[in-house]
Length: 279
Ligand SMILES: [Zn+2]
Image (cartoon, rainbow, N blue to C red; front, side, top):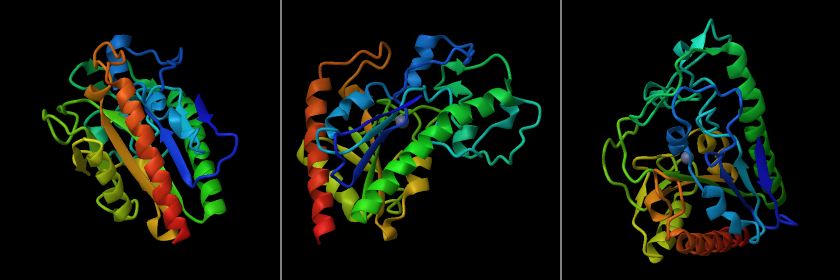
């Protein structure tokens, strides 16, 4: 349920991951909501936008399962146990995202309705954790540890896309968004100079960039970041209006231009990381 696009040899201290672009809907999902509507939860095409990083010498991990089935960018405790039939055997700690219906197992979709007309069994939630969440995290950790072990530092780029507007499930409400939102958990998940560098590169390419608003970075950057130990994680959210139709999910004419700009950005990130290693 995951895939790693690997270069012949990993020779740069960069790891890219796309946790939300999966579109292989497992037969046991059993959701009520219309499939095409549910697919609006995907960060569609993000793994294709970053495909060029493999030629740069970096691996790209991406989920094949959809984020609405189980979300690898949430902690296992971030679970709404009212969705589950019978007692959940572990402790839960539902956070703000769970209250908005978008925790570990999503409950509802952006004002479009409830995903299920049933409760989920303990066994099926455990199955999603074991077949999707844990393999994704194990793969990401192995890639990050491998690069860190070899180079002494690692730059992890956590790749996402966002709807053009917020809504009631997001902290910003119904507001238009910038072209890119960089999330470093308010300066805590990577060297702030790295965030400024990426923002400046995107600005030079002509894009409007916001920092940590409305997305600061969630579990995947929180869990693996340790800037003092040379582990830098940055979340990059791309506005979907730059490259796709948000209802049909089709690629828009801007797709190729954006992909070419991301090739320029990731090449610049590589130079930045190599310069930091040499310093
Ligand atoms: Zn995402």
